[in-house]
Amino acid sequence: MATTRRSRTRYSGSQRSGDFPIACAAWYPSFPNSRQEDLAYIISGKVTDESDTASTGSLELFHYDYKDGDLASAHIHDVDEGQLLQSIAIHPKGGGAVCSFSSDCKLYNLGKSSGLQLKVSDQDLAPLKDIGPQMAMIFSTDGSRLATGGKDGHLRVFEWPSLTLLFDHPDGYGLLKSIDISLDGAFLAAIPATGKYCHVWDIEKSTIITTIHNSNKNELFGLCKFSKDGTKPFLFLTITRGGEGSGIGVWDMEAWNKLGIKTFSRDPITSFATSHDGKWLAIGDAAGVIRLIEVKKMQISQTTTDAHTSKVTLLDFSPDGRVLMSSSIDSPLSVTKRNLDKEWKEWQIYVLLLSLIVGSAILFYVFFQHSDSFWNFPLGRDQPARPPPDAIYGHVTDFDGGEFM
Image (tube, rainbow, N blue to C red; front, top):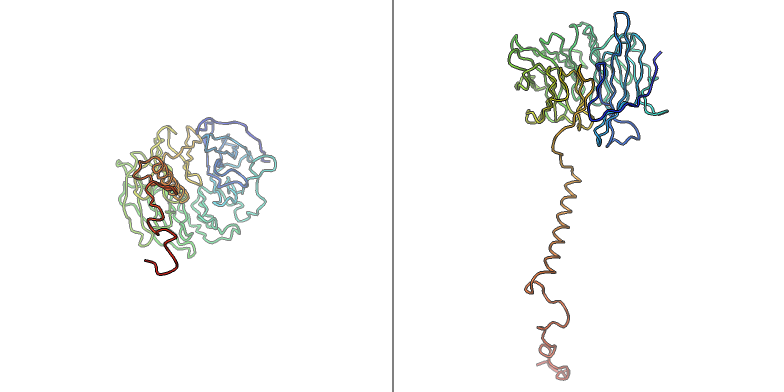
């Protein structure tokens, strides 16, 4: 039976250390009644003991404090013996976390009956029972579809939460390295472990609409991501070019033409992530270096070299994109803040304009009160230069009601 246990361990700074590597991890969108501006949550899975005959693992819930930069373990859920963790997909609207084990998948939700903790959901996941290990899983951006890629290359797309099977391709191409669903939920991209090509499927029609091949035999595809900014539809593929470093290739989604390839690292890219607003990409390489890339310019805006000393195995942006979670063999979980200039929000611009108007009025008032006599106009009734009424209207006794002369 699975058991749960609470952990009071806190980790100073953003680095989380441990003895066991992380098998899978992702940010949880939010938790009801939480201080969203201050806290964010991460669910991670790890193998705590593995041998030829048995294996054990656990799911761990962390909360990250934006103000202090602290990552703390909130709850540990031990899984059944022999259920080796493979991958995790978290619903983008907080509808739970689907975890793949050796034989089937389970759905976990966040509960708060006796403190924040992970609980196995009562939702029926019959179509995912005995499905086997899924090496890759991902929800569509709106959470209406779940794509899975089995160890044998079997691709499936389910409607969520009904789990109606929309796409089923059992003709495996071997172990899958990476899958992703387009922003509109219409296309599915998949790269096999060989890295020799990338298939793009039309989910509704269950047909391949294009196959992207390597330009030459020295190139290998690694990971795939669709653009998410909603303006220009692109497909990003990480590419390792033998002896020439590795980078990102960009294909448009209209004619599926290659727009270009840009090199970002001398080492192979081992992890890839996109921010939820689609403005940023993140790559981690075999040397443990993390690079943040601005999509608009396709330029590196931030490089982190001290988070890991070995290959980065996973990357994931927080829901608001303020921090980046990463993992490697040497340091299971690390959180890195984005060192970027803050973007102006609309209300901040209005506050600034109002401040300028008020400030200008105050300065004018001070200047007026302390200016010389030329500007400090006399305003009293008995002004020295004010002429007497007689000089303008004459004496009141001179007017007898006749014609005024």
